[in-house]
Image 1 (cartoon, rainbow, N blue to C red):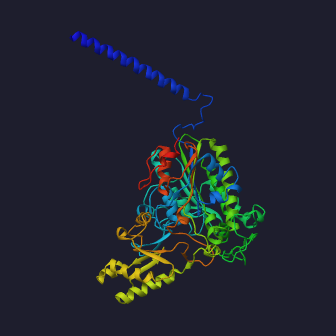
Image 2 (cartoon, rainbow, N blue to C red):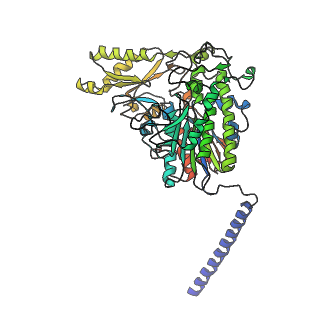
Image 3 (cartoon, helix red, strand yellow):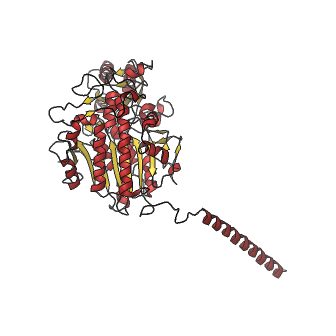
Length: 566
């Protein structure tokens, strides 16, 4: 009986073995059918599990809708190339309330939030220093490449690593990381702490400069580029429209009273002639023109060649920020001929950059991503032509109302340290001395400010869980609270309203026109497609790091966008 049972077990095992081998043969045959032949296999970089170069592109002040409003006039090689051949995250938003340039550049490359990386604004009140501080300031360094103070900058105020820092760590320093932008913060914060160099434009003498944080002298390729004196040539030209002006059908007529004017002009109309300002800002005017983007692209190409980026088996990173759209957008607004013309020209600059990458790094061997540091509001004067509620609010009016209310409630005293970035900074020492709680001060401030026109709410940043806020807004405020640099109470104006300028426009709110920005990916390792799933700016860095197979930045709070990967 035992022999019979043993025989049955052997027979069952034999049958299982036959079935398993047959199944394995079927799977292997299927794999062979799917495997591309050597002749049809896609090209890969020499270092097979990473691209040879990553190019990060930030367009300063680019709303998401610009991709589609100007789409028909774009070339096939710039924005369209990324949109049609790459991956488009169409519902990409900022995950915090401080939609400014410094925080935006920091968040894109750290995958973090102001509450952790410390960049809560372009400027902010630093309670440790007892003054307003600039996000990239560093008084311990010196300017390299100029005699001005424009180089007294570094990333020391940013408390997290970046994509570039992680790439440096992953390659034991062999990867090269370079940042390029007209604005210092647009170059420094993306490049990060361990970068080989970050370079920005000095309006005093028209040179590209850096600081001793990165190096003691300019590389020869930067010296050679400065010697070309491209800014001088741009100053002699007029800013005329790329296309016949009647073709700018995506914009309002050129002559609008709510648009700002350039120095020396009486009207905001084409063609623009550049009137230089005496003193230390001869080349400043170039920033508010398409020539600023052209200069940035040319310098980026010089960096590509000078640093031999993407020319070996170690992945490099080039961070390029185009700053001129912000200057132009602030001055002329979202529906200006100047704004449309600049984006059409920027599209051509991108096309040239991509063509040069194909030629030098190799088509299919590089990866690019593109986003923006913030969006922007329509100019109230423009919005009002469509009967849309919009106004400009005087920040001084709010500050005066706060001070008056606190004195009336608690007696004489400097109850606030400052009002900045739509935030009230309370004097904690005086409150403690007088035994007055922040909650009591908040009640006084909120009651006073809700009487002001345009104010819809005042948020206590210390008690966000108690605030009656829409469900998607609370995290936006939680992500900006950095105790030593943030205010105590946040003022919320109604949609379409902002503080400041009577002409032109600005940004810095939680509304969709400020938070909804592009996120495009293209090239090696990227699967063409799109998603309408909501993604966040914090997702950019972990997506790129996952593509590279490296650890995400130290304070990262985002997640990789899975749909991107092949």
